[in-house]
Length: 114
Length: 112
Image 1 (tube, one colour):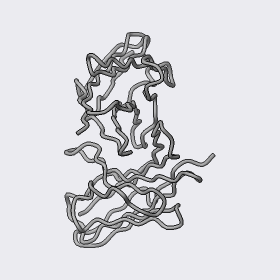
Image 2 (cartoon, rainbow over the protein chains, first blue to last red; image 1 turned 30 degrees about the vertical axis):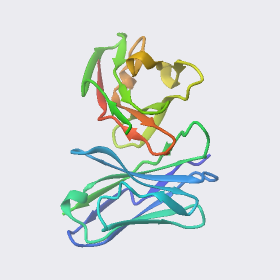
Image 3 (spheres, rainbow over the protein chains, first blue to last red; image 1 turned 180 degrees about the vertical axis):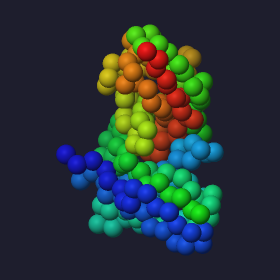
């Protein structure tokens, strides 16, 4: 079946602009996660959704970052007033809520802030 | 708090040689442990997972890992390396909070 998809695959933006990154999880997966992968910080958790609610937002680095999920499916990560340090690969993952907590990852969106 | 340490940011082996990638974890509760592989410009693919059912876990592509509670380790091994195994490998831990805490990764190079 179809895996996790993310769009765009690459995004180049100017410092100060807003960007939106999209994630389509595997159909039927109730949990959705955003992570960020950067050279200096490795793989970092950003936010977790169960259905449309976000019980854990502890990884969002600043109030410029926000995310929403609608219909228990698609999620959008928004970064306002982008900074150069926001440049990274943003990875989305989804899982069917089971005891094994196995997460399936999308290919990522590479964000470059110039 | 949970954490993962991967010893060795780079590991090089010859084709056909044993692969050993090290992972040590810290967790205040019985952990769920995972190994993921990332090929260039791709997302993460699950290799194997430990969820307390068995201490020796077999995964895809001939990889396996052994959970050793006394050593707080979950090292990844493969008896015979293939050129196609060249990639970056991440160990991760999750408690029942759902998020994954990743190690810093180990880049595996395989030489002919």
